[in-house]
Image (cartoon, rainbow, N blue to C red; front, side):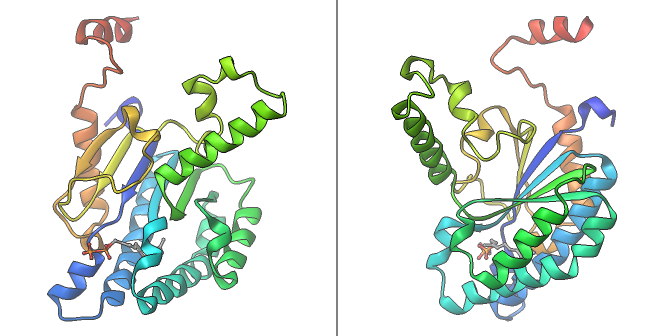
Length: 245
Ligand code: FPP
């Protein structure tokens, strides 16, 4: 795979933890725990490959409605991850970021999260973004509110609010454009993840439960991505012409 066929930004919907546990007659939380091991392997592999940005859907705005025990267990897992992986994230020059309603997270998650975000701010080998209490629609609504506020304050003219401008209000505006979205577990939907950002992303659905997803599966997804022709609304001939120059 050449550097140009490598996606700059990969997003992953990490699905199937519950089913993985259920298949083993184990509590759902064990599936999430095993899923955290996949997070470690995929983060390492992505950095080693030279992917610039990896965004993981770790907890959706809608996941708060899950049984309280599962929500609490996931929060503890997140805290554990942030504490245990701190050294590796720092040693490998990874910048940690977060997307979503972070203020809704309990302080015992928010504190190590904020601390690591601040400590890793200057790192540049890869940006690892955790989508936490995140929803794509919620994110777009927030961006629209922020733009409306700027219009009301006279900072932005109503007629200048283009798609590009609105995109600038999204929390993902500083990340490279999303190139590849992967969803594990065989489900083929986007479940409110990066709705704006997937506009021209390639979608790959993998029939593997997240706790079993390892770097070999990521490599296969990247091969599929490299074999796709991205046209961004243009024709094949136009794309061929522009890559000739
Ligand atoms: C979806 O599987 C997964 C989640 C809601 C949580 C994802 C969390 C982790 C992978 C572990 C912790 C994360 C980090 C960053 C350390 P599901 O429970 O909906 O699976 P199911 O569809 O089989 O029930």
